[in-house]
Length: 512
Ligand code: HEM
Image (tube, rainbow, N blue to C red; front, top):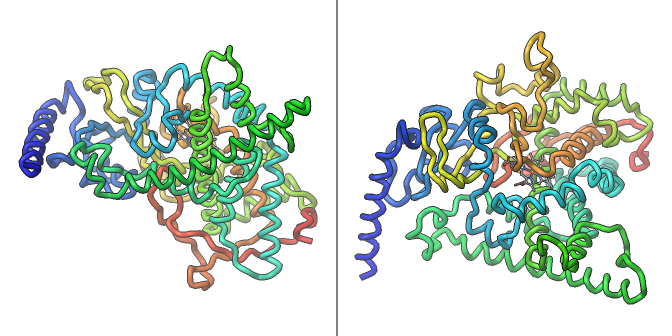
């Protein structure tokens, strides 16, 4: 009986996809790869590095094509013309996201990054901007970040004195995770492993999300992994919230406002809103957990990945490293550490970071979901179509960039057009060939924080140290590989391990 049901299902899905294929082409979805297969659609054409698979397909089928992820229609865009048409000219219809089973479960269906465009999203977006990630929030927590930068440099300094190797990948993750932990919950929690797993899982294709006959079967073991991660994270964050509630109650009992240990962090703000009966949007414990997960994942891997790619490109380009250091020496000197506030005075360092985000965008695909049927040129995009804008592919397109595979920060120092009043390319989503932080209403909330933290950490690292990379076997190597690993972010495939060599700078105590 089960076999008959399976056969019938296969037959029906083949028929549905067959019918759908007639709807493609002018007047409907754009054309796309052939063949699609019954049930799985075009899933067989996608490897684990989805952005690379889509890039290869776009070389064959053009900058705007469609495909089926199982039975879910999807359009893939890899040029600025269509990116603008979708993300700016038809922004409202493409302001929601695709929610996979992993995302729904692990963000408690209450996340900022993934919740549908609507009143809850608006409320939280404004709140996080005002309290955490806008200029005010970023400034309020700057001393906390300085402490963590210093801790990282001190640790590397100790390794340098001992002539020992340091796992830079791991230390950067620890640092970015501690920063967001302290901003959110006032303490640093051992959440790194869970967070990296979650980020990896958010970027993987769970066939069961697209092929409904697979939903119950869980052939990839996704369901079990999601549940394991959920349990680990849930108990961790539950413990944190309970501890904070107790601390607040105790402080209240003693007539004080703040909990012990003091600075008002995001969790305090959420607990205040939860207690406020007049608040327009009601926040409960589940919302809090979802938001903590959401912002932990958004701010841990992305920043660590961005810093690491920039460092790797500088290690691989000694001439650029020298130039970047010269700028630091000229502007900051060698009596003090470079600081976040030096950023605007270090245009070459800024250009290094922008060039890193072009060649290695930490988030390679901007993914949105269509919420109402939309006409894009001669095509009609049905509701619930998934839109993927391949930021990674646009960064490597030779028709958009001269010698795109070369790492050349200078391209971000020149005005965009000769003799034009247009300035240099920036990261704020105004130039559609370059969207490392996305664009429009759903643009990255952490942009300001990222553009403070990434240049400052990269500059401080190269100000204080030379880095001798070593292979997993411990042998010195001249060039660091640039292979990628799958996930929602794109980290390097292998961990960066280096022997640090302290530079003769007098300021920072840890190097004396
Ligand atoms: C180098 C670092 C980062 C990069 C490259 C990056 C990139 C992105 C991209 C491409 C998006 C999707 C934008 C779109 O759909 O148009 C996004 C969304 C988001 N990012 Fe980031 N991000 C970074 C760091 C951060 C940090 C530090 C945070 C802070 C917690 C953060 C929080 C978010 C949130 C909350 C969203 C969802 C916004 C929404 O849906 O309204 N990101 N990010």
